[in-house]
Figure: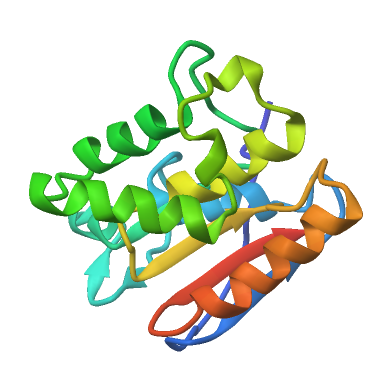
Length: 179
């Protein structure tokens, strides 16, 4: 097989406070582009800068500023909603003194406060999607990357997510993909 280029000649400049949407059909390279920006996939060429840090050789610094909501929910069945958020805070090295408030604030924003002690396996599909979004924002990142954040949501939940995205853009940059 010959070399295959999944993403070619992509140029983006996104300002703080903006929501930038990448649209395209299945297989267009949207998820691949987002995953290269987050370090899930390594770019074979080119480079990108996120708040002054290059993805080619400063990915640890880039990831300190990022929150990612993947296209499919990546959850642990036996962890509670609260435990998922605490785990993300620990992975991102959030100071322990800030974790409790960050978790509570995030649960309020995504409307999951009353479900904080439910295990992931007990959540509906819409609540799992909201938990994935909460995991992307709990550490208050400067850049939030959302890969089809409303996929699988009912109309009302979709509206709630769009409303949340509008409020989240204050002081941040949001990149999202959609079909």
